[in-house]
Length: 252
Ligand SMILES: Nc1ncnc2c1ncn2[C@@H]1O[C@H](COP(=O)(O)OP(=O)(O)OP(=O)(O)O)[C@@H](O)[C@H]1O
Ligand SMILES: [Mg+2]
Image (cartoon, rainbow, N blue to C red; front, top):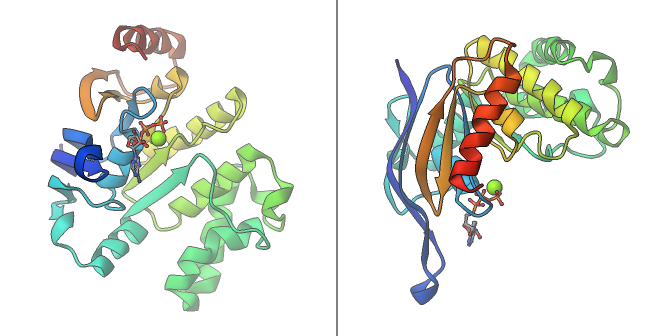
């Protein structure tokens, strides 16, 4: 299996002097191309920090992060930004879309910044993605005029515009009710089935149960890992029971 991300013995601390604390305490993690993984763990265990370190958004104190074979620490700021913009997609709990821009313009904005000449092509692609996630008819709406689930779908479209090799999601369903959460998971599963790796942080057993590998964090370390067969739309309850049993065992 080809690795898309490799983190080796990552240490990251916050604070100074006596206050200094390792938030990531020697974490090693590998994600394969096209893999669908999740990270669970108590609040404050370092899940978001790990994700930010793996995508190069946050620097690390020691250890190494490699993306598609490239050591992130030796890249220039601009090279790193280019990799993030073209190879990685990000979906957060609250999509960071801009007010005063309609849904379509929000989705195309980052791509237009890169390549204004291709406006027609970019718009066509955005419309195809909106159709795929079921928000085609909302393109002219302001972001205050759609539901949370619809907004998150728009966030996913924006993340997909560059055909990323991996989507990072920090609690992408955290603000949604369970019906909308499952719809977002359907979309992420479909994107994954088409070959894009997905890494999610989640507190929700039903979300984690859709992934094929769950890493459990505690106090800045990955303390356990659980594998499931790739989700094919069936046996979600059985998968969830397994995840919940493991969560109980881990004291989450
Ligand atoms: N910028 C920062 N400065 C200082 N401490 C920080 C900073 N960011 C995170 N921390 C601390 O690092 C620890 C891990 O934070 P992190 O956000 O990674 O946790 P998490 O597992 O994502 O938690 P949650 O489930 O609540 O989102 C926490 O104790 C947090 O207070
Ligand atoms: Mg977090």
